[in-house]
Length: 260
Image 1 (cartoon, rainbow, N blue to C red):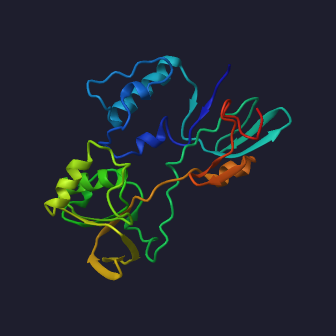
Image 2 (tube, helix red, strand yellow):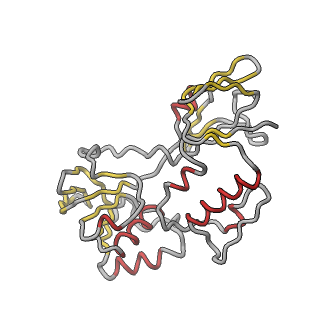
């Protein structure tokens, strides 16, 4: 099979955009692909180790990857697909869409969400030394960011709408985070909802009370979603149920309603 991978960034672009010191939830054997062992000394690999590993997989299998090229449109024409990208036009007999969800953050629908100080991706803690930082959310990305920011000398406040810690939090980081909260190193607000963001403050509701705090930066770690518009532009059916929204597909073949 003559295969081409078209990637809007470089290989494993989503992993590249993870926090620099991110540790995976899965063990390395669960992340290995293509019969290439992923061997690390630690039980859980880190982001940088994964980047090295996947680069080696590409080299080992001599995969053809068109990096920094974005697919704009996909059209099914009889027995083939026509893809238009930022660089060229391609035709193929079979098409796999593996765009993930990390590239599209969920919308924070509060006044001030459009300010440049509001971010949805956390990379490095250093720029936020001696700054007042609010993190919106209470799952892994929020907790990871809070720990790194506190370690770098930021004054961290976490605002979470849940009643208690999320069961989704990685079990090996929760005790560390809870310890920071108990010691007062991180301010944790449960049952709370941000209502407004200004250039130097954040306002939120907690148990009927409006609280205003000083603020320099906001990380809205409220989740991500697939590019539904792109999927639907191809003609792929989308379905929503109690678990969320996702493409409709055959559970045995993973083929959508657009037949290959």
